[in-house]
Image (cartoon, rainbow over all chains, first blue to last red):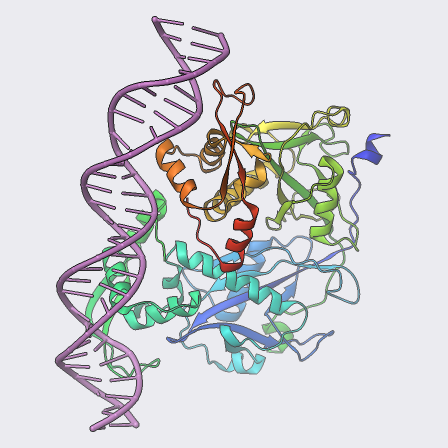
Length: 238
Length: 238
DNA sequence: TCAAAAGTGTTCGGGATACACCCATGT
DNA sequence: ACATGGGTGTATCCCGAACACTTTTGA
């Protein structure tokens, strides 16, 4: 038995295409949302998909994900974007083997109802009710939801989904929506106030926006405290 | 501005090669280990790499990982194997774009010092001291170590690395080695006994193997209890 | 005899959980 | 008036962490 037979190292075949999809998470004050777009190419032209593109041989994965993201939502100073994993079902494309390397991104969802968006058909959906998507994109969304669940438990990613100012009610909605369970309001507050991650802005929301019925106090995220935590390897556990 | 310009969906190019590497974790009773092999192909012929192969257009990812794994360590009834993520640095291969989709696997390390292994040059290394590997395989190992750390905290994966019978000292060594920290022996035992995951075998190891100096009690893994936990979504937190 | 690992209980503190009532506002 | 969400404090329990001595055996 030669080495070549027994240990199957072999030569590469350059016959696969690479695509990259984004699971873009947003938050409307009530629940977690995911962004879709109608496909403008065959196959599945017109069907809903995740924002996606095919990569060229020189395209770095994370860089391409960033560019795709920024092409859609514009430049943001702090973007959270992370690879999920490779999805390589052999059935994915009729012409040949396509490997998709989806990433997820978190976006502070402020005023994205521009003309460009409606023109392209971009649309938010409740993460609990994502419609049928083409390819294996529903599987990708499910995987992304599991990932975000785990991330949210460990790091205060939630803040990347909220605007600069937010109420504790919104923050709690976000956690409940991402983790799929309810928290006691008093305990939730206690927990947050025991960290140094929250700054009281001493002002009140007018109660008009985002599913509130009443004004409430506004807070912002303490990014210095957060950065300190990042260095030391914190524990933030929901 | 047309759709094609503003939203960059495009056509695929089938010009990428796919490879798959395995980070195979073993445990020798003292510390966590990783398996390497000398490369038998250019580039980097002779350099140490992770066990790897190039995929054909029809090869499913996970299936190929299993086959590669079984080709090396033989069939096992319970294998733990999971994709890490895609590694797509454009520099990875001189001939063209290669995407590697490494997986990690856990193996109960029993008697793998066969002729085939030494012939191929397979070798275990302490996870803390993995030598320089070709390509980006060190980066992959580091990533796998992070993953295993997280997994070990949440699920009793450790058991997949131990033989049928083990001592609590070995189990503790495994956790300490995987997580990179020490535990108090009494607290560690308490924690384990409070679960139902451990069965007392009422017998003693002779103390001769695997870095022991003294005989100690043997235990085995309670797989029924484990399966029940899996269904209900357990908490197992180190 | 010395070094190294196995075995064994108790105490303390902090964090998670459970729980109820009043207030403000918009419908 | 009523429904919806905002705001607030206390008691309990469990788990994690800290901590020391004796025994066995091989070197």
